[in-house]
Image (spheres, rainbow, N blue to C red):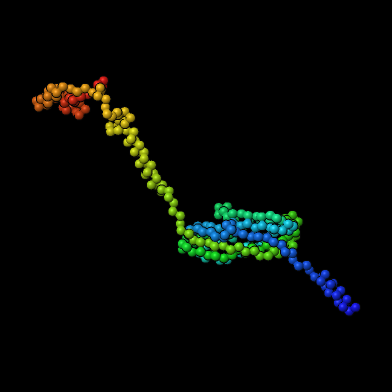
Length: 243
């Protein structure tokens, strides 16, 4: 009789004890999954995230994000948007320094040495809610902390193979000058109008005696015909027919 009474009391005590928190699960990972990122000194780099609510009933509400220190940099935790995640749903976002989105960002100091790296962990705190907090849901219980490892490295600056604007302009001017020379020959005659070897049918050769008279005329001080070489240069040995 006494043992039965004690068992009843013990059962009543157990019945009035609060229930143990439900074992609800979610996953947390960085983007990239390896957690390894790199950038040159002075550059802004960062991580995206992927958070999956694996419970089929409760909503997951992230409440805090912490990161281990990263020397030689200016951290930026403001990019994390603390998404409210419905049951059986994944929220993910890549890091975008222009839009200011992602999980966590940093800007390397301009004096950060090449090859320097920092490792650590991100720690995410969250809560479980019975429904969407903005639509009547209520707090259910705290969620377990989840961590994700990271490594950030200072890389060598990227050297671009594109010529400088000034060099490109000089190269363009040189090409234009070469094209002009190709289009025009000596004296401004287009190369397209010059035919080589010349057609012998279009040329006439003067007799030798004509050359002798021209030479004698110059010796006697007689002014010869004006030709392409100037006045007093005498007649040419030949001329192009039909001109």
